[in-house]
Image 1: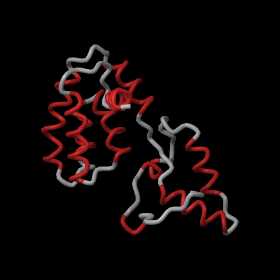
Image 2: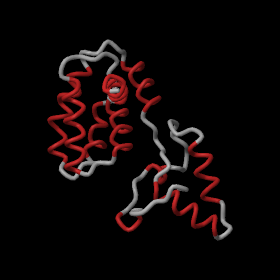
Image 3: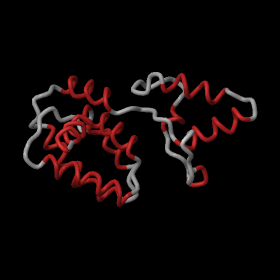
Length: 161
């Protein structure tokens, strides 16, 4: 399990080969994300952009409450990318295939269920279409990639959702 998990996480980080220290790189990212309440899905998708263009790291930094905590990790990651045999285009394609843009976020699912119970299936149908291609950015759907605002957080879910 651990080997499979690490291979999956390396893919999410744009690394095609396991090297000494990669486990620490992964764990350290999770620690920084946890301390700064960075969104899992958005962090990895923005890292996908940053793996192609280092200027995109500014967008990743914005996800962290304490961006300065992210910077040392980002420098280690960029250094590690330089020692991976993939080309930039191969890395971009591989990362886009494992880091979705859209996921069924609880607050959106809850809203779709509430609307559908009232007879309005528009949001449900939009989510259904969107999630058929979760790895592709879709025009006009940027709001669907965002995590909930504090007042939208779903604190209780049920097996049916």
